[in-house]
Length: 155
Image 1 (tube, one colour):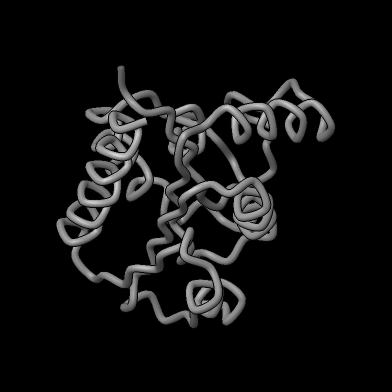
Image 2 (cartoon, rainbow, N blue to C red):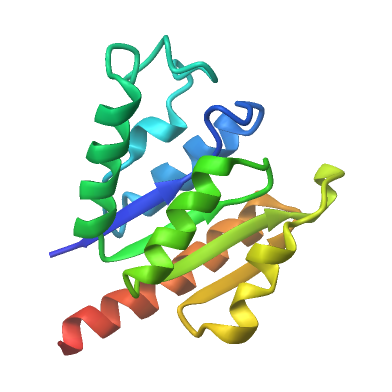
């Protein structure tokens, strides 16, 4: 049985990386079920009015996503585009003891939040990987998910 993967990526903070999210999500599907596949949808708009969340209230989105987060085995977050929602999801996942991989694209002209970057020094459940080429990001995802599959198989 495959992993249940919770993917985080910016929606309201900006959709400039949506195509990148698509590549990551498609790759992760080879390891299991991506519970939040809609984050990568090119139909999803920043205001949430178009796409899978278009007819849901903020409360319904929150509650649904927290159910998925609780049910997930691992979390993969693309954190290059700053997002309050992604930060919230990562914080909640840490509180739940989830293993988290954060991906940050170094050539995007942005600075990684110290709250994300610094979390790995005090918590073994979170790892931050910097990349430029998508192939490197996918390699980090593969390593993280393979390790997670092995942990789940041992339990």
